Amino acid sequence: SQKIEQNSEALNIQEGKTATLTCNYTNYSPAYLQWYRQDPGRGPVFLLLIRENEKEKRKERLKVTFDTTLKQSLFHITASQPADSATYLCALYRDSNYQLIWGAGTKLIIKP
Amino acid sequence: SAVISQKPSRDICQRGTSLTIQCQVDSQVTMMFWYRQQPGQSLTLIATANQGSEATYESGFVIDKFPISRPNLTFSTLTVSNMSPEDSSIYLCSVEQAYQETQYFGPGTRLLVL
Image (cartoon, rainbow over all chains, first blue to last red):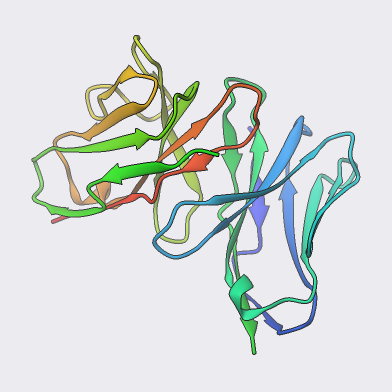
């Protein structure tokens, strides 16, 4: 079955630098992959979607890449700010009934 | 986008009792999902709530333990029955419109079972 791996250790980044988070999956390449942000005590919030035929997607300071050969997606935040501190979740489309398979998330801490 | 509210936001319950969680959406939506999230863990899908018919449960989750209702396109309930401390978790409702490929989440219900 499909498994998703995100770095379980918190990522500490200095303000202004680029933060890069990794999402690896083990099985088939999904039709699309999504990134969400989750703050403590809140539900996840959708950030970006990238399809299997897309290499890169950008939105303001966010960039996502999708490498189906490596079975990996990278999520970048440029010019990071303390307000970017949160847990970032990767989710893969399950190919049925609009369902997603979720990674455990990586906690990002941006230090001023 | 959709705005989703959940009630209660948190509760502390005794083992053996049941709790019903409500999910209300500000617009009609095609899909509604119920998830469970343990601290530091990924979201685990419990079931898809189907309007007008029985919910579709994921492996490891059964209707007797987690009965779900969805009487219309804007509302759903999840009941956690005969609770044990292992049911302590955050329960999240999410929605998705057909072909929009984006899920919107409620704020979650934090449940502690003693």
